[in-house]
Amino acid sequence: MPNPPARTPDASPAAVDVRGLVKHYGSVEALRGVDVRVEQGEMFALLGPNGAGKTTLFSILATLRTPTSGSALVLGRDVVAERDAIRREMGIVFQEPAIEQRLSGRDNLFLMGLLYGLTIAGARKRASEVLEQLGISDLADRRAQQLSGGQRRKLELARALVADPRILFLDEATLGLDVDARRTFWGQVRSLADAGRTVFFTTHYMEEADVADRIALIDFGVIVALGTPRELKARLGGGIVSLTTDDNLRARAWLSEHGFEPEPGGQEIMLLHADPAAVLPELLRNLPVRVERAEVHVPSLADVFLKLTGRGLEGGSKP
Image (cartoon, helix red, strand yellow):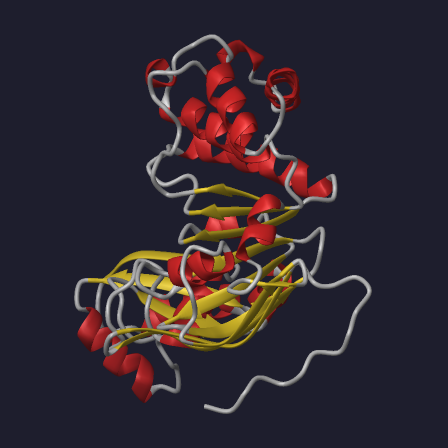
């Protein structure tokens, strides 16, 4: 594989600069030539189904794995050659809980401060500052094992902020939380990004990715689209007609015969159309099957992903 192109020196390097990144696990090619650039102060989402390569890319950027080939810089530093320097300037929240369940919220943060080299007094001060910053001082003296899932996730985020990192890495950070807890968590993360902190996060929840400044859609180790949420949705144009009938196979055949192009796969029939509200009455009148459900909606990130890859964000093989 050819070497990645040389970089032009920059007084203010990107928060993340990935070029030609490849990662193999034996015969499995988890990443296949990924190129991504994230600017400092940006909130950036990596969106894709399970098995798409999100965690592999995340792990390389967070210096937990090494690439097979290609290059990756974080804050201008190489993830392999300058791993320790990157770790001193990053905070991380993993999919799986990393807090000590038997310790209080304050003691978890105090311990993290000591691990980052703060003095005892400095670690205590920083723990209190972060608890107050995130509005969770009420969790300070409660053991982590006594907290709800959403509260533990807030504590994980606080733990990642103890060293005042320049970049935050969050890997499926709200997995298992209910909708309200996820919304609260991402509201806090968005506030951190608005204050100038770089955030790089992975998710397979499209509503979470919508809070990002930009989104990369990844599938089978390849970035298939990159842009703001608005830009990605605009790629579809128009809107979506969703139909469920008593015979979807026959309905799809009729639609194809009459100049429509239903999207492949799925439990419902999806049509991309420039004027979905206008065409829906025609479909309801003329389809030779009983329509059990019909709706029109603006394109979502899930619709974009389905259009580009032929599969949904829930995963599964390409049809």
